[in-house]
Amino acid sequence: MKFKPVISVRLFGVGLFGCFATAPAVAQSPKPPAQVKVTNARTAPLASLEITTSGEQPRLIAKLAKPLGPGKSIALKLNKPTGCSYSVLAKFSDEVESDSDLIDLCSEKSIRLTD
Image (cartoon, rainbow, N blue to C red):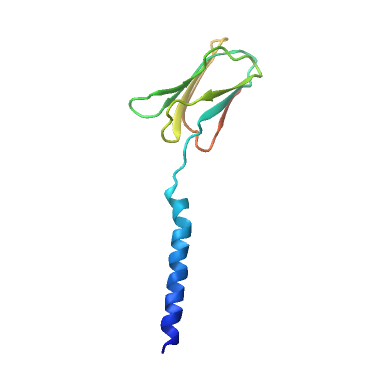
């Protein structure tokens, strides 16, 4: 009879250790990057680009300071990003606009603008 309680305690200890070993992974939520790489893969210069939070009251978290030439890339620092879903509005010198809602910047660390 003494044998069964010892096994139960050991199994409980292993199970408890397993819970603590996985707890940090479960507790961590995805975080947006501190910066995002933007690549202009079009033949026209990128005149402006804005990245905003999603929701009813969007907040600007990144903006292109100067035009970005064709084939060029730039890293934009994100200003106090929260959550993972963002909207991107890109305007090109040939009057083409690209409006993308709900880009997941937690999984996508770069934005590639193409035709």
